[in-house]
Length: 519
Image 1 (cartoon, one colour):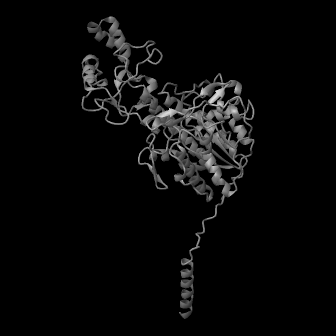
Image 2 (cartoon, rainbow, N blue to C red; image 1 turned 30 degrees about the horizontal axis):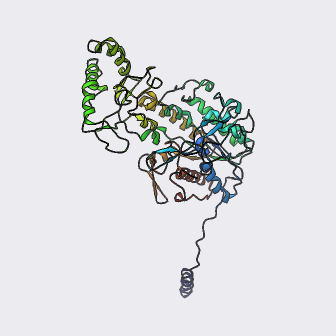
Image 3 (tube, helix red, strand yellow; image 1 turned 90 degrees about the vertical axis):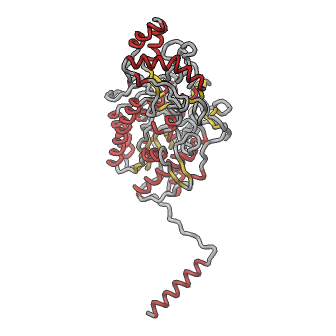
């Protein structure tokens, strides 16, 4: 008992001595690689891996890419150099033979996104010397990573090759995967598949759902990749990357419909007065005139045809939905023409039938694309009207008197096609990752949180609200600097959990929400 008391006194004295020492330092957990080996890290993927932001690829954005952030954290656990195929400036954009083929980046001027001043200086035909650890290629779909010639400068002008990969590919005939394997990676990251549906989505569904077609050579740029093709390619990528014992981390795909590109512009912005950001004032007198001269007659004619729910009269007290074309509904052009001919005459009735045969008012389930915001109320042209001619006034205001076209809105049936394909891709990603024992990042779950409750990290609340949410850049698709840091931390969590490594996460407070005009 006395002996134990003696030890207690010694322990208490030691504790007092330690707590009274102003120079006491907290011993941090050492950073170790665990069962992973970060000596040679390569990153494969698309624009997200490259660090694309604000509608462009530029030096500072590349430095803030999630693979580069990862490489910096890997350095404390034995990671080696990480070489990036830097562009020539912080303006963004690309030149091919001196001609601009990609525009400069955007910045927020206090009221709207605008292009930075200056001209692009990154010439595609001027090759940069690799090999490069960051093999992220903006625009790449899954099957592009195994496509020979995807980095052939001679094929860029004809759309047969990718201008970003053409700058840094090791040869005209190589593949992204081959350039990765040539470096004998000990660790890799792979996040690919977003572009396999993104082009379809951002075009408003102007593309083909290629499900059932396993010949990717026949696909267009806006098509949805067949899930079987995706699974085959993804399995080939992982099998080759892990063949010599390399470990890695992969991520699944969010629903692209949750991105700010699809959630920022409301479906019902038409109001008597401007009620909030994004709303369009049309005036009470205008609403009354529209109801009398257009919406009322159309409502009556469509009701007679059994489709009266397509269009309702506009309200003078509430925000009203946009007028859109929905190619998934029955085309009543012929019937509408017949009903309107007695009052409008054959020529005018035929015009109304052609314009409003598949018209309806938008609903909350319709996703109005971000660029459409600048189109609402504008006059259609012969090119974008779908008629081959510019409609006459007053039937020439997009979304108000003239339906927004397929390229302006993602309708529910199109969003459903994207969801089905994405779910299939994600099932393949998870199954293949599990079979190879790879770390897995649930990027879909992260995006679901950003688009609903938000994510709190480092005392910051991040969400998917355009401009102010802190997660996304001004193009509405790609992450902001802080968004890329959030992604990097998610990858670190997955790596630590799988390989018992102790990599440190980054402080999100050290990363900007948006890039300024000058860098």
